[in-house]
Length: 451
Image (cartoon, rainbow, N blue to C red):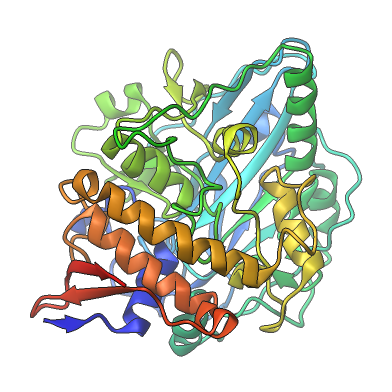
């Protein structure tokens, strides 16, 4: 057996975890070069019921390349959280993403929103960089924003992604055509001309502000994290036992793939589209609710689904509300050494704060809480210890990538080793990584030892 390649681990960690993979038949036919940097076109008035039910359109950023929603390395996802200011009730809706110029397998469900509802959007992406683009029309329920909206370029090399976890996210071009709509919807793709790479959000700050008001008024109750099978608090997106090099990234949205088209994941579509396969968005949020929670016998926070009426669902916004309310100290908050919040490879406190605002850390983000050395110190002391404690529960849980790690335990160990490197913890702490992974003859991680 041999130690896993750190560069291979970096690539694996940048994905975090995938829902269920596309069936081979759903992959697009070989054509132009796949573009790892794609553009997502928002519909008119995206924060209204009509806008939410209008498919968001994925297209290529580079005219010589192609983006395809059914390519698992290019899939984009959208998640909406809706709160009724009068009652404090939260509901979740998953808008659909399709390729530009195509039709969905089934027309999206049109949600019924309460009067004066506050709607927010979060975006996730399986590629490198996802640029938001407006359709040229109004933004619906939105207000003024202080963010800038870049037109993100391509030409990011495979070696760059290996070195940084994601391809470089800085650009020098600018697209003024859709800025008005994005501004009206309070959309944040990054800071200035530097984006967050895979993630972005619209109107999140207002949503969390209204949620905070509802919590204080006793209208919204956030359930405790609970206690896991290991006797410890259940995992959250702000636990140092969960986070990696880019915490709180991506969404829990799932879609259906059917005969080369995409549909929302709900009971009606599953029944109607026999043989459809499901696919999801890698990230900390999906890792917690779909893998760690079941393995530790924990229950995530859910809310009524407007995509699948009569059922409840998870969401990034719910994860962050619960983490903010109940994660004990030390809490993992957005650090300066997160590759998604760097600008030209350098720490950026303004960009780190901009990211933090979208995941309900607006009251916590500061130079002190974002300190890179502090983050690495807590990660090093907490993550391996919790992984050792939970080995008995994770070793028999399924790996999100069986071709890379043979269990959830070995996947988490592999992910930790890669994150330690990507966060530059070895140099910041002057200490080598304290977990060693081993692989079989096929390069699959099959074990881990702790120093």
